Amino acid sequence: MTERGRIVAAHGRHYVVVTEARERLVCFTRGKRSEAACGDLVEVEATGSGQGVLQRIETRRNLLSRSNGFRTKLLAANIDQIAIVVATSPPFSEELLGRTLVAAESIAVPARILLNKMDLLERVDAARDTLGLYAGLGYDVDEISIRQNADDVTTRIASRFDRLTTLLVGQSGMGKSSLLNLLVPDAQAATREISEALQTGKHTTTDARLYLLSTAGDVTKGAVIDAPGFQEFGLAHLTPGTVERAFPELRPFLGDCRFANCMHLHEPGCVVLDARERGDITPRRYDLFAKLTRESSSFRER
Image 1 (cartoon, rainbow, N blue to C red):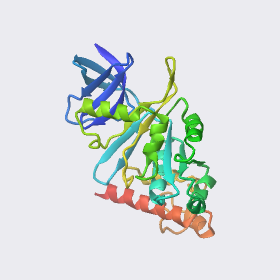
Image 2: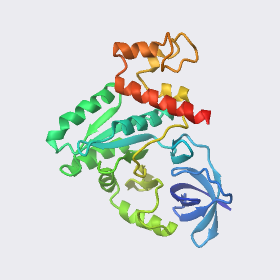
Image 3: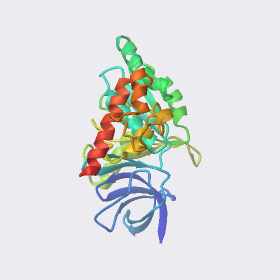
Image 4: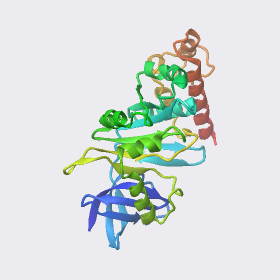
């Protein structure tokens, strides 16, 4: 007999699934390959002793992946938004931020930016100046200080996550883990429980993990998927067409170039290049677009 559930953690071919009956099962797949991701809704067959077999993955609303040019790694499925944690200090990678925004756009999921450590006043202006570009493109930017104003963060940011499944990403040192612990007070205990179930050490898994936000009765107010920390976000698996549509500032110009297959890199009669020259597209955003397009093209030429 199969049961319906949701994947809350993964390690190799082993998955922790919480069933609709709120039973926690460690499940594995029958084949050598697995295409399941944290957040997937699945059907499992319990085999006893808290274990089960993954039988089927239900149709997803979306799936977020990253790649390194050789393999693609599934990050999370069925998400409603992506929250990207950056900070005034240490300096955050604008390229990593841009790549995450492109990934969000590629699956038509809203992204919001959380600027942490606003208490470091001497660094605020520089961070605001960098993020002003993204606010101008329509991305929500919330300014927070987890260290100095935790109550405000808990109240205000929790409202942004209400009844949504949010993928939480961020570089090391930005405050992502601190934010998670504010939103999910028992996150550390849940992490230990998951690690014990998967028989992994606390820091050995590099997969996303899902935590439920507080509940009112039987109504869950939402969930947070904590993405693993990473220093790069490869997007070679995206097609050049997907890449160009993932830049909001490019969209008004798409389809108007002289050549239908224009890559917007060096072709004559390219309206995107003209827009860059006029300043309608900022150099740093265009440079990221060109880099991602070349990565995508190289990946497909192998």
